Image 1 (cartoon, rainbow over the protein chains, first blue to last red):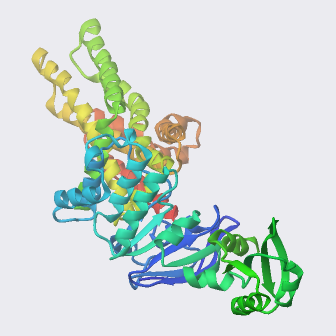
Image 2 (tube, chains in turn green, blue):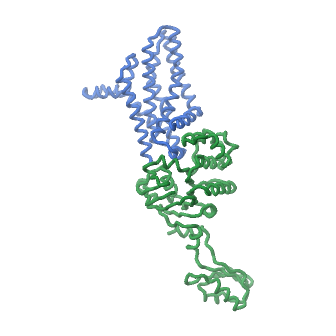
Amino acid sequence: MIEVSSLVKYYGDIRAVDGVSFEVKKGEVVGFLGPNGAGKTTTMQILTGYLNPTSGRVLIDGIDVVEEPVKVKERIGYLPENTPLYEDLTPYDFLEFVASVRGIGNGRKAIKETAELCGIMDVLYRSIGTLSKGYRQRVGIAQAILHNPKILILDEPTTGLDPLQIEEIRQLIKELGKEKTVLLSTHILPEVEQTCSRVIVINNGKIVADSAIETLKGELSGTSVVVEYRGELPPESLSVFGSVQTLKTEDGLYSIRITPHESRDIREDVFRFFKEKDAVLLELYRERKSLEDIFRQLTEQ
Amino acid sequence: MKIGSLLRKELKHLFYSPMAYVVSGIFLLITGWFFTNALFFVGEAELRGMMDVMPLLLMFFMPAITMRSLAEEKKVDTLQILMTLPVKEWEVILSKYIAVVSLFVVTLGFTLFYVFLLYLLGSPDGGMLFGNYLALFLLGCTYISIALFASTITSSQVIAFITGFSIIFVFFVLSRLQMILPVRVQSVVERFSMLSHFDSMLRGVVSLADVFYFICLNLFFLMLSTYMLVRRKG
């Protein structure tokens, strides 16, 4: 659905996007992740035909975005960063404008359905300038999905919302992701975990990771094991498995992290070890890195 | 029609904002004053007085009602919404241009009341009046196209206004400037001066060359504006 190959974009001397290539298949919900200023927005603006790339190629549904921008724009729904909207219009006026420019046959019906889906029926005839951030965001999303596009590109759809609104918008995106190809950018990690099946991490204009969320976690999470036990067993005795780090000791209660020297799953061996020594094992688990850790690890390089 | 949809939106922006009413109101107030001045104090039932100040008046008013067109879209970033809709750059420019021209025509329409008074009080030359209004219309449109171009180069309305005004001013004073220029260049400069074309139309002589001149200027600045919008993509 979206094919990007060696995309480069210069702003003057600054290289905002530096050889980005990726592909998004039909029906995927992909998270575009990176710190602020990593080049997410620029990449999305190129995908939507708002900016031209300095070099490289973008195919949307097989159509080159530079050669036939209008055709590409017909197929995409786009929510720009910070949701710019016409403050002096009402959501109805605004959606009606979008519907007529996009040549939607039964505009009134489409507006009503979309407004219901996005939950903006109550504010349809109020001036956009007076709406709260949450409603504005919904109007922005409504505008993007009005023409039922195959591809949805959302640039930070949840920034500036309160936790309740964030949850609602995420549910909406999940709902939309069932039948559309979605590319959404964010710097909020739990968002990606919740809504996306795949994640592309971008830093300094370059892609630093591109894989399914589970794979990414698996690849980067170490094989460290944390054990918690009660008893006389000195923590040093565990060093047969690898390097040992004491996390907590309290009234004969030990919490120990073991990092094996070679990467393998040592949980079974640890369990047998405790069984042999007849020590009380309270907890044994492989330490999972959160997406935050992974993200930090990827973007620090 | 995409142009139609775009135009409807532009008209909403123009007529929903108090700007249009304020500017048009002041415009009518000033032209009215010049008209009644001639009527009551000089005792002449003619538009001459009003027509003389028009080029100068419009020089302020046209950039004032046009400056918002693109500068505002850039400033609040709605340009991203607009330019990711399936529209072409020239359609956007043309719709904005027609919208402001419409506002101008409506305002100009109100001054027809003075013409009505003229017919009531005397017997004005119909051909001359037509020439006057055609000249005003063309001049106003040209100012708008220039101001629209100025609006494409900045995201600040103030800068758009000043730039628009300055470009119009240069075109306007070309005829005054020619006195200090070498004789050979004079006739060329004369041809580019808006005022000389405007004046010849005011006399009631509508020559194709004058009309053509204004149409060309309009097209030139509309194309330049479109180019600026295309160039923005980088």
